[in-house]
Amino acid sequence: MENLKEINQFDIQVQNTSFGLITTLKSQQKQSVKDAVGFEEKVLFASDVEDSKYPFSSTFVLVGEDGQVSSYVEENGIMPTLFLSPIGEAYVSIVPYHPDKEMEITVPLFNREQVEIPKGNRPFLGDFIGCIADYSLFFDVNLWDARKQDKLLAIEFKGAKVKKKHNTKIPFPNKNAIYVDKDEIHLLAGEGEFWLHRLISVSGSVLKERKINPTQTYFSKILKLSFEEDSYVLQERDNSIYLDVISPEGIVEEQFLFDNIDPFYNTWPAVKIDKGTFVIRFNGEFGNGWFTIAGRELLEFFYSKGVQGYKNLITGEQFTIDLPDFVIHKIVKTKDSAYGVLLSPSSNASSGKDTVVVIQRNLR
Image 1 (tube, rainbow, N blue to C red):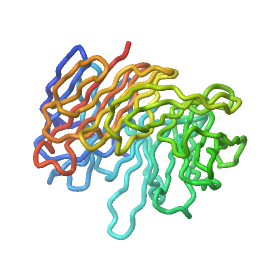
Image 2: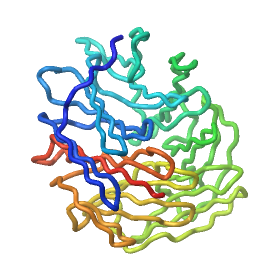
Image 3: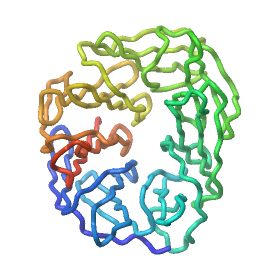
């Protein structure tokens, strides 16, 4: 395969603020952000761009913590899914154009000179959730069909090369939340009046399990799961957010975090940016935002309600984003205690679809 071609795609504006670095990228064409990961302390994101020169292509953009931007065009396929290999290299799964079938190939993002185009597989619809041992892991949950098992894709590497893809159906119950850390895969699901906490192998075998008697039947998002240490589960009710702290013995303690919030429509899986520190994004009727939890403490809570940008509801700090109707596409870890927030116009936005904003914030 040929290496990606570097292109000059954007007009770039960089603002170095007390809040963090804000990089605005504006292209001559409309673009649609597809995916993002943190790579080499940078924000790496993929977009489909309306460009007659490359009608079946995607672009990849690296935004450094100094605001330096590099862009590359992918001519081998579309529908990119970015992820990291177990040794931290950037990889992508793409779908080459074919008039009759849709097959996905997985290749390194850079340094492709010695890579032959691999055999395609059926696309996997799940999200990249991390790496353990020699595997990059993806997880897929069908929220609309109670008969469907959750699925795990483990891409096995041998050194820097993809060796094999392993598809596994997870034993019921389904609709699990997943947590990957310390070469362990943990699941949490509702089972009647209880929560079922399981430790599984890459092949889906259950290695350990326990039932937890919770404070409420449903849970919002997990921050951490462990059989040897405290586990942390995020909860929301009565316009407040809490942590359920679960001891190794299964005892649940409720920890209050913040009140007087608007109800969330959605929350996304927590992004671990350091030991015990997690960032969670949300949206609701009046806007979107994110908050950061370290241990049992709420460090920051940014919300777009009532401002053209975001306001930290804890400190009152506020900054402006010059986009009329924007959403948070993804939050990624860039390095320990630092993260990037990727903003792009909503699907309903009437303007601004040529613009992407990357916020990089360091908590240290």
